[in-house]
View 1: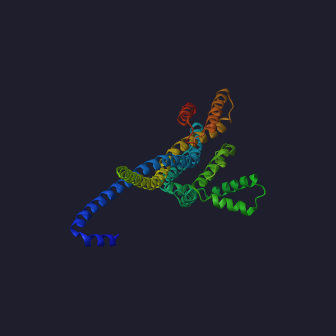
View 2 (view 1 turned 90 degrees about the vertical axis):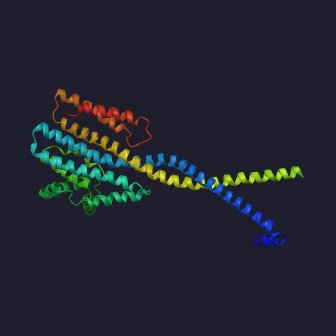
View 3 (view 1 turned 45 degrees about the horizontal axis):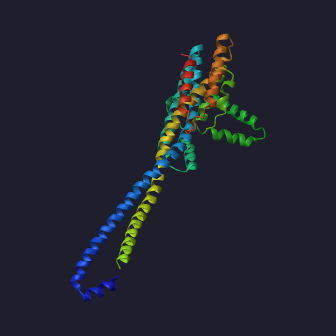
Length: 222
Length: 124
């Protein structure tokens, strides 16, 4: 348009200057109006997008959180039942061990909650699952001195109950090779819940109870 | 002439309205994408913590009830068989309860029922 301006300005410079000011003001007003519309649209869009996505995200997160914590809860409930039973039947020696295991579960539940609160921001579910496994890896390290004591003191027993778990797995899939059974054991040893599972199994054996009472725990995946 | 001018004015008016709508629409699209992203993240966080709370509670009831049921079966007097029947019914309620489904409309109602039943059965 510059050639038009030049052409017009040659003929009547003063008049053009007045028009130019007016044009400039109109342009400015137009720009600010359109900017306002853009902003209004953005605000409306954010609200509409959020409203729908909040519910969708809530549903996804709810399912994930519920399934993850239901497993922890089952361990806690099982240990609480054993605690009550030992109380009622005078097996006082087992009480502190069960309480230790409950502490480990409690700590694990706290960690899961912390993780849900932070990592849940990642929209990729595969990434979330990886993170759970990473987190479990960290937990093979002792969570505290009591945890250490239980682990170190009962090392041999842990080993034997580990073999039991292997045997059970072997029964389920009798075609599995020795190699894959061994791998299954090392994999499951990595998580806190697997460790608690072994300790609980050992405890139930020591109490002279049938391992049937842990049938539901053996089926839990972690 | 007057009619032509009026029509030109109305064309211009239409154009302004259309431009305003277009800008609003562009902003809306951008906002909607951003809102969806933020909403999913926020919703997931709230949802996961809420689900975790209910999952943990229901899981612990189930773990307790299943273990307690097995422990009670060792001694089979009259009093225990009554308790075992009550436990059976509690376990049935929990296993039927879709606690992991946030769209289940009786979630809170069923949870209260299970909670109440569990409190009756827990040994003091």
